[in-house]
Length: 199
Ligand SMILES: [Zn+2]
Image (cartoon, rainbow, N blue to C red):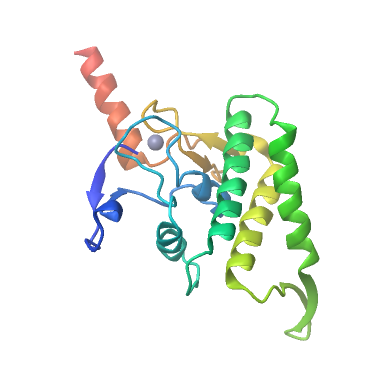
């Protein structure tokens, strides 16, 4: 995602620049991966580097979190993200994900599953995450989402082909035709490039 815009939040210079489209992946676990740029472009910094960063990102993602993560929790979130980045970028490059990365995800998934209980709902039952801490439920949701992707159609996990971008996204189109993270961003830039190349 190349185009950048300043946010209304100018309270901190560190959070003043956000990508034009921050949540394009269509899946929580992939948006989580995209919070750190896989390219070396210095303008796209890690958007969940600090605990404050994470809280801001999670809220923008729609999570109802009140408190920023404690240092241990932040380290755990970074560890999970590192594993997911490793797994999904490996898949995007048709490589086998590292066992160590899958181990981290399995650990998180096991904890997420252990927190699940059947609870009555609408004349039936549903599975609910009963962890008391919202941050745990949110982390579990990321792990479950990643597991859902990995057990689904892997062709739908894609990476934006723009070398400046390489963001991950889920292609939920009928005929697997989605190519770009955002058509009005990398997709447009590519069109301009091709047009200039012709003339
Ligand atoms: Zn892109």
